Image (cartoon, rainbow, N blue to C red; front, side, top):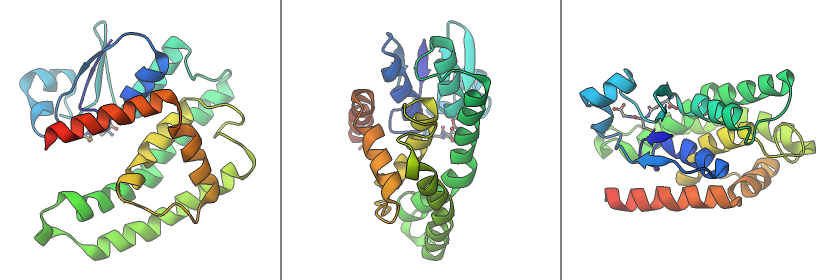
Length: 207
Ligand SMILES: N[C@@H](CCC(=O)N[C@@H](CS)C(=O)NCC(=O)O)C(=O)O
């Protein structure tokens, strides 16, 4: 099992999953700043993005699909039953389509773009738009500890790791008390702590 992608990038989501599984894996900290577009990397992922997982010659990309594959393959954090699998896909796709784009807009315009190109109005628009999916999640978590019920599984890992950007952006979770408590439960897991440590180390090496 070989994972490509720096732990501070979206590859961190898969680092967290691999840490949960607890089997040995090789981690190549490919930087998303150019290294993901070398001819060798483009052969693995023609999109030029990380993460990419090479499982003994089987190549898969897209962070949340990698995690779902790893869960099903190993049985770790993989709930039983076809309906539960549907819920895993539902929440993973929801995180990507309903929440991530707003977070990325905020990230670009608050941190990544050169200051002259940043658009504060886009940040405010994204912040407002993010409120809708956050309220959906908060309502869902009102009467359950985790997305599918009593147990943490790959759906939680996927959604929580996408929403991890919110912490980086100092997005205020306090209006969403159920989300805030759930994030606390997810992030206090030893594997999540190891992932965060790796992401911070990789970020500090980046300078
Ligand atoms: N939807 C993809 C997005 C992957 C993605 O955009 N990765 C970024 C790093 S966070 C990347 O590799 N960027 C480098 C580039 O586009 O050149 C996933 O979740 O895996």
